[in-house]
Each structure stands twice: as C-alpha cells, then as structure tokens.
Image 1 (cartoon, rainbow, N blue to C red):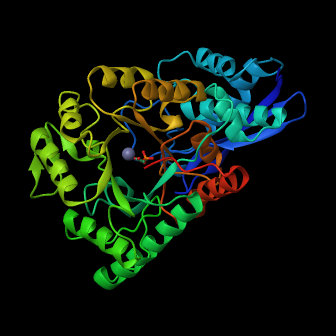
Image 2 (cartoon, rainbow, N blue to C red):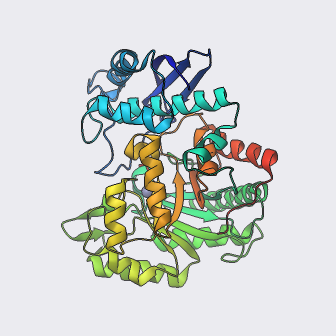
Length: 422
Ligand code: PGA
Ligand code: ZN
C-alpha cells in the first residue's frame, strides 16, 4: 500500500505562456513522480474552479502561487505519512479536504495535479506502464485499443481571434489502420493545408493556440471547402479516407436565444440545428461538438434527434465531464458522446466515473487535452487505459501536442494494440 512521504507543487508555464501547476508526489518507498496539469481558454461555465491569484501585476492575474502553496501546505500536511489503498481513497481525501462543491477552496488545478502525481507514483511503484495503471482504475485487466486521433486543421473562435465563429475544424483519419498511419495521413493533410492557405490568403504558418492554421477565411464555407481541398491535395478521398470533425464551441457566440454564427447569420436554436444539419449534408462530418450552447438544455434533445446516426453529438462545455450533468443529458436524450477533460471535474476518480456513466449509456468517449497544455504526456496513457474512442489533442505541430502523439506512437510500438474504429 503506497504511503505518501510528501507532495510538493511548482508554478510552471503552459503552451500559451500562462502559469499552471506541476506537482510531485514522493512515496515512502523512495518513488517520486511529477505531473503537470493543463488549462483551458474556451472554458465551460460549469467546470471545477481553477484557482488563480488575481494579482493584475503578475501574469495578468493568472498566477498559480496560491494553488501551489495549497499543495505545499494544506494538502501536504493532510497527506504526508498516510497510506492510501487506491486512487479512489486518495481522491476522496482531496475532495473532503477541499470541502467546496466546485473545488474552489484548494483549486481544481492543485487537486488534479496531486491526484495525477499520485497515479504516476503508484504506476512506478507497481512497475506497470501508466496506461496499465489507468486501465486498472476502470477494472480493466489490460488496455485493448488505441484511440483514433481527431486532429485540428483550422481554428477560429476563442483560440484564434474569432476570424470565424466556430472554434476548430478537425480531420479524422478514418481509413488508417495504425496510429503511425493515422499521424502520417494527418501530417500530409496539414502540409497541403498550409500550402493552400499560403497561396490563397498569403499567410504561412499563422497558428492558433492548439497549433491549427488560422488564416482569414472569408466565410465558414470557405473553411470547410479549404479542408476538403487539402485532403484531396494530400492524395486522400474526403469521407472514406479522411473525415471531418467540428468543435462548434457555440456557447461563445450564443446570447439571449441567438446564435451569432456571423454578422449576417443570427440564428434561433432551431435554425442553428438546421444549419448544423446542412453542414452534415455537404461535408463528411462524423463528430459535432458543442453544436448548441452549454445551457441550452431545451434544444439539445432536438439536436440529438436530428443528427444522431449521422454524426456524434458530442458535449464539451455542455457536460463538463460532470457525472451529474452527464446523467441529466442521458435522461434527456440530449447527446450521445462525451468529451472527457479531466481538469473540468478535478480528480481522476470523478473523471473515471464520468467516463463509466457515458459508456454505460452506450455513448462514445473522446478524451481531450486543453488549449493550454504542457510537455507532459499522461493524457496519452489515460486515453489508452480508459479505452477512448477518439483522442483530441490539437494540431500536429507544437511539442506540447506532439508529446501526446509521440507517447501514443511509443505505446503502439510497445503493445501493437489496434486503433479504435472511427
Ligand atoms: P479549451 O478548449 O481547452 O480552451 O477549453 C478546447 C475545446 O473547446 O475543446
Ligand atoms: Zn470544445
């Protein structure tokens, strides 16, 4: 049974140059493990609370010194010298110690960093790969597949200065048989898209927060058409070889019952659903994330009824990896896929429960990174251990993204596991 000697925190910088939290967990056995947590920008209103210092003179208020001090002081005092049977016990102690409903006292960033550092320390102590440890949390004896990657090609919205309203247009290598082939396919499409946007818009690698290309598209249709053309130029057939996924992130352009998709298109919820259905008619889209706003509960069931069977109706800000919201959405028939972001809920145990509930309802699970990431690759292991259908890590550029893809390549080489079906 692992006994914690101490936990320590450190404020580090994420891929946007904003502070985030790193934690180390040292066990009495001598094992030490370190983990970094990511941070979003297009965050849901119902996420667990990320503690920030709020001092405008330092990192524009985004400092994490308080969260780090909570690890070094309060959390360390509560955990040091104690043995924990398993992850659930450790996480329950953290939740109890925090005592708030949204982890705002100690900070979800502090709590998750410790939850994950303990996980990595246990994996080292048990001498199992991290993905195997994660599989154990879901009572799986072994990992059985690798998630299929869905990879940002073009970005807009909050990740790219809102030149178009929707946040991400992703490509999905549906015909690829291996992770290696999947990544090679997407790199070819990305390079074709970079050449195309250079020709068409005169900009080269103008990239967004997650590494997607972000040229000044004149319209949303231009963005879709350019993606289709890039897939063709790379030698693939749009649809059977490489499909599309969209993160509409519509909460960010929704207000008072209106979806402001563009200055000319101010749509009612019903018209927005029709617009999404039209995109599905015109383009090979297999997954549609946050097609409606996070609290538009009245219309999500209609969205699902209209689109299910044709594309995944995927909830990100809508569900916030929150077991209570997922249960409510299942009861309301409001979606059929979960975007799983561990830091939206704040501990591994709760995220695992969210994943379990979604799966029990027959839903699909897309494991996701955040727009502010670090060089840590634990998410790749988690996506394999929890048998994600898809993984969404951003583009195929920038090392905070590549750290995850490279880890997936290493896991593939080690295990020869198959890719999940599209
Ligand atoms: P975030 O966005 O990490 O900035 O919240 C990612 C997403 O919306 O999927
Ligand atoms: Zn999203």
